[in-house]
Length: 290
Image (cartoon, rainbow, N blue to C red; front, top):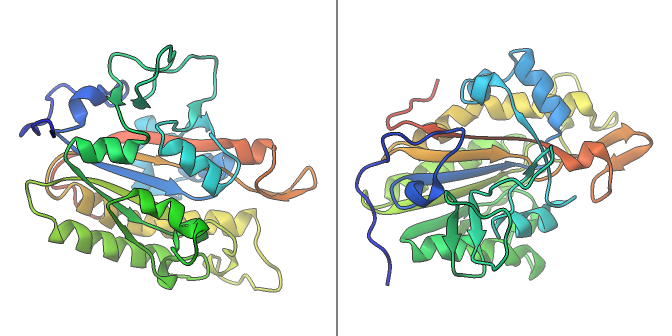
């Protein structure tokens, strides 16, 4: 039997130390993974004022430095969907926002939303949420058994080629789909919306004016892709908070190397891959797109 859903948000919810046992059931939830985004690039752009729409929501305008739970998309999202978000980059244990009930867990705290299912998505569904995935990279494209595992964990999933890594307008297309999903949902239905943003993933050269396919991707084109996402993310925040207060988590699933110490790409154990940006915050009802 599903527990009743509260009609009002906790008045004193603290974004720095949120009580997810109170937030789940009263808020809509938004999880955005900025696939492949490096921490250093994200931090530099926030400090330089190049991602103003994201930065205005970051605590003190800065990203938190965290460690990814996996070195590539599939592994990291399997962990995230089990409640293992990127871990703060300092000695722990660190209380988790979400956790499966597990005897002896050192990261389950009084404010953790604890679920009795194999994964967070089914736990939120049991709590009355509609779980929706808007995929980006190939692990969400449902074009084969492997690409069906992650989106298959949701009650509803969406993917089109326009959302994928080869599309220069991928994020705009994803945001438009998110807006449609939210608009079609009954007002009383709580929502867990997940968006996997493909724009930073290679190929990303086309996001930087003057870059060429022949020159390929670089740290600079990776940064330009994040600027592109920032230009449109306000619409996503507005949609997610259009019905009620929303708790948002924005993070990378892993980074990627652009020649760092001779490494290129990810699914490898390098600082550029393991270190990721993270933030969580509240979106107040009626948040408008800039």
